[in-house]
Amino acid sequence: MFLSALELRNIIESSFLPKRCQCTLGPDLSMTVKVFGDHQTDRVDLLVTGIDAAQLNGCREINELIAELRYDLANPPRDLSVHRRRAH
Image 1 (cartoon, rainbow, N blue to C red):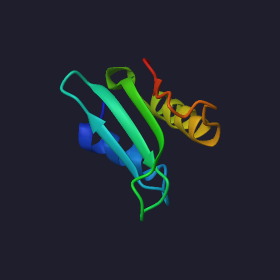
Image 2 (image 1 turned 90 degrees about the vertical axis):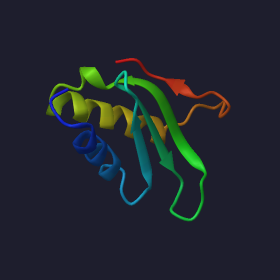
Image 3 (image 1 turned 30 degrees about the vertical axis):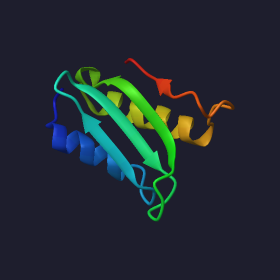
Image 4 (image 1 turned 60 degrees about the vertical axis):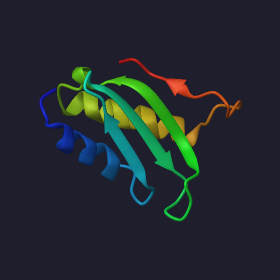
């Protein structure tokens, strides 16, 4: 990972503005991204766990992750009880 955890979180979270996004990074560099419906509710529109942040070695990888997350946000699964797990 070529960025600090704080820089990586800031890039990903700000890429979903004006929606609220929360990015957490575990000690094993496993990332979870939550995108919320709006600023007034805690409704989660997208939850992705198991992202391997160690694989985010440059701008291209980060941009591809953000594009995939935006695609998932725009095209939610029909069964909303299923949380998507992504391992890069």
